[in-house]
Length: 217
Ligand code: SF4
Image (tube, rainbow, N blue to C red; front, side, top):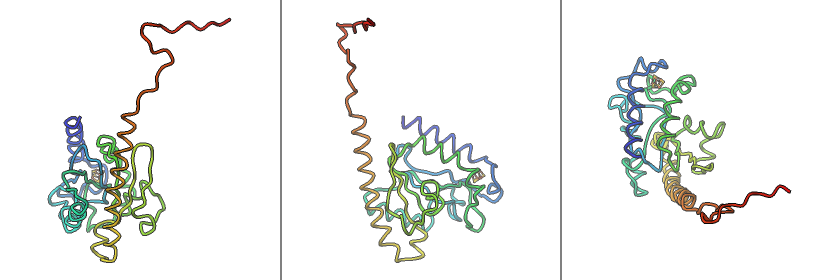
């Protein structure tokens, strides 16, 4: 399964590498499809590639990336154990925010990545990925407070760059990462319990004794 997922993710990355669906393709050096474990329990979604990401074709490799690595290490994880991507896969000029039409144009790639990786937790980094799951919410009010559906948890986080700009956020950021780890374990237990639940027994389950035909009268 992991190999199949890896092959499918590579195929998506190949499509992205030649994508011209929005204007961001004109200014890119490299596309940045995302990187990490195709079987990851946590999928991080940021906003868009910056200067260093565009140069290297990898997500979160500048100062924000160093800080993300630090936060992961604090909870006993590393980048190879998670998957990291962005809502847009090409760098917006001068690191401006991605525009709504660019996010829409790029959405199908992210949707397909999520379906393939099928993480226990989707952790959003910053406003634009948060808006996918928490429309109209304010990050300062909901960071660290997950929302659940039957399949996974959605966990809003500040963008690492925000915490670098404003050191007062770092305490919250570290607390949120500790909580993120707890939520990941909680979701893993839930999925394991769902997998291990015995099937509901049929009323007539003895192969030696075929079910009697219902009497209509
Ligand atoms: S940002 Fe997404 S939709 Fe736009 S050109 Fe890049 S890969 Fe294509």
